Image 1 (cartoon, rainbow, N blue to C red):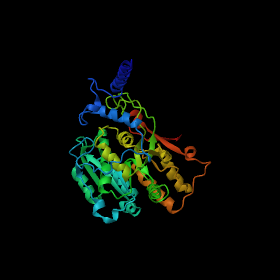
Image 2 (cartoon, rainbow, N blue to C red):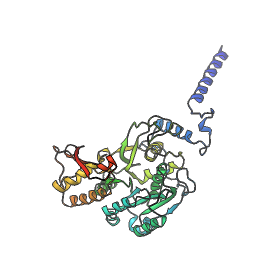
Image 3 (cartoon, one colour):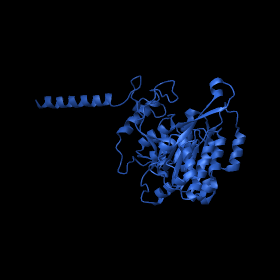
Image 4 (cartoon, rainbow, N blue to C red):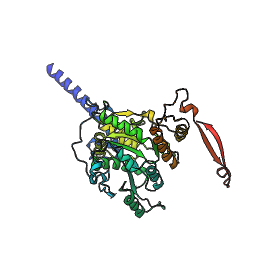
Length: 405
């Protein structure tokens, strides 16, 4: 009887182990277990496995996974590229000792042909002014695509010689290559300017308040809110559904991303990381397969893998450039402070300059907090422009009407 009981227990245990083995791990279309495949050849299957494990992973006391910052990143690797190098390098932090103790480095991902936008940022606030605030700005570019007809490599080198604020990677500019540019920005900041306390990543078509951001970073670096572990903070998305409509710009196939909802992530418009977090993201990008939506990949998938908790700064952001226009108007008329610190330029590079320059005047002359009974969302009226040419494909004058947002 005892032998029968032992046999029965052994059989049940073996069945349980088989069921766990059979159904707990993902398989590919041929029935092969993905975790048994080599990393480089496993493709998107590894992404699936890593995502699933990231959702279930328990983090340690300060909210992070295992510390890998002791490992040095591979200088020749950029996500899945193994021959990465800088076409235009930049050692400004190493060459100038006064830049070694920066509060933050602002990494602006910029399309190679957007020289007008880069010029707008430089006119809005100069590099010298930023350095006096403990900040440094660098524009991150890719290689010129064949379709680009308005800029040359010689012109880019001249821009670098004149301003000294560019880096360029040896990958081609393309919408689906933004992940390379994003990770390259963090890679440069952590390897070439590693003594800067914070990294601010932003896009080149974004308007932002550099004075407020500097004050915020200063408080983080010296005050009671100083982060003890990794910091990632920005506009946070939760429960964002994956778009499966093929006609949509953001279409993602199930082979690329099998789940129906993205993990929490930060908008690439602008976010803040400390060196610890940025370094962890760069290191993790060397082992997690490429995904082309850069902010989801870096601040969602990679951050989830290393257990970095995201912090919401959603109140900083406006989705409407018109609100920033109205802020400029009210700063001029009433010396009201702006309710927002980050937003899109709405295709108007002039807005980048006007917003920062009016903010500087406002801070110097002590603007007032906007009265609660006059919120920007109730008082801002934008101009809606529609041209006869757009309607009839003829020349004509602009028809301008007022539109409440």
